[in-house]
Image (cartoon, rainbow, N blue to C red; front, side):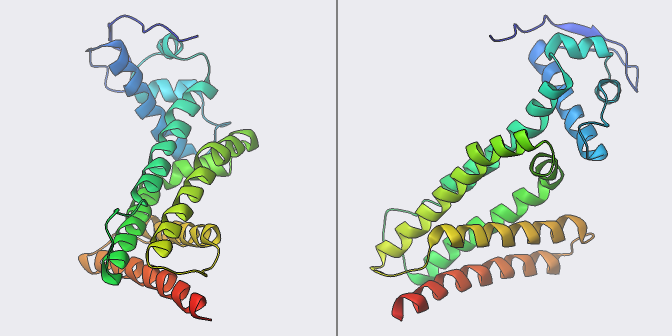
Length: 226
């Protein structure tokens, strides 16, 4: 059953005590943005309280319950659901163009997708950690409905590329997808926690994605030639 949208309201509570009139959907979005920040700071669902979320959002706790039934519902809407978008985005981007491409075009295509994965993971690393290493039921549901399907689609996109060039034998594309996602996740951790990035660092990051694309693509061709 869908919860009806609360009416527009004016709120004067919260850190800055400013009066702000927001529509119901805007207030809900504001609460979710605040909740995501709090969950990422605490790194834990259990130690995060609705009082902390309300304070961050600039509302009182009663206001939270006009939009959500529980802290768990806030966590799911603020942290879990937004992670589905980049996973679906990866899968859709990995579908190669229908036209036949040259080797360099294929490598550029794969490198661009991989770099996009690194950037997205870096931006959402804290939330991803909360979901994957948090509640087992939440982690399992996310894996089954978002992570694993994205890997399958990624593998299918690569299979399409290799079939397009006439390879009859190539390695397990699903295993390759797992290897690439794992490598991109490690690169995202370096990007997020390795300190401020210079232009040279960003250039190196893109070069590493290009190298990863070459390793995967040319490695497949070497395998197929055996």
